[in-house]
Amino acid sequence: MEITIVPISKIKMNPNNPRVIRDDKFKKLVKSIQELPKMLEIRPIVVNDDMITLGGNMRLKACKEAGLK
Image 1 (cartoon, one colour):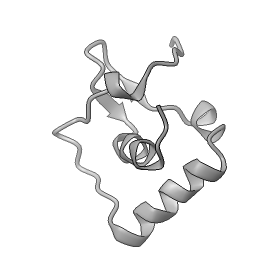
Image 2: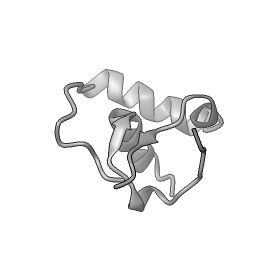
Image 3: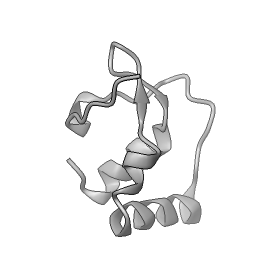
Image 4: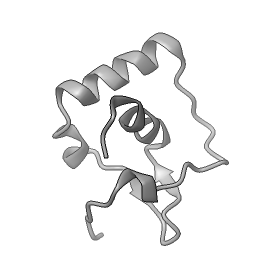
């Protein structure tokens, strides 16, 4: 597996994602990413060759909400 840092704007949400985090839990995820962005290196967002999220759809959404680029 190759790890590459790319702009968030290039990553697409997976429309078939079965998981959703709502309200309070989502706000906690955003806060966690703001306070400890290094965690994304430990648990990265996984994408396919088309840059569609395979793992980490809610982390991607939270990163955008947190203002990460």
